[in-house]
Length: 156
Image (cartoon, helix red, strand yellow):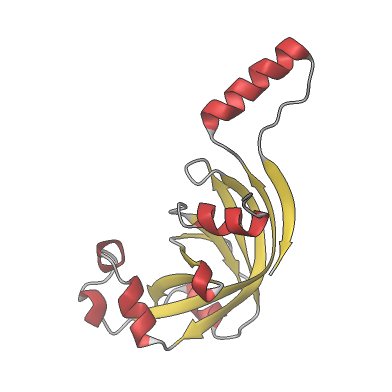
């Protein structure tokens, strides 16, 4: 069975460690995404005083910018960023990576959870650097266009 672009999106998102999140009027900032296809969401653990959390309170549209060779995906995602009060979800997502940012770990009063619900994504999914190089060399030898991956727009 061939994976759909949506399946590829979620699979690749689970491998991405850093994205740029543009929310509110602020400059896009690096954040660690916690993608969960079963939730149709990308979660973020942040601090109550972070600009992205303040923007999440409005529930306005936000954008995610992808440029990740390890996750083999590039592009933009449109969606809505909101505040989540789901303590069980926060416990599920909590990790040593998140703990490093908070003086009192999970019990720190400033720990907050945000939920990003994608509505549309325009992505380029690749098969990795080796495949890209092979296809580029092959194209130069054969005068054919390189097959460097999949492009598409996903509506969630």
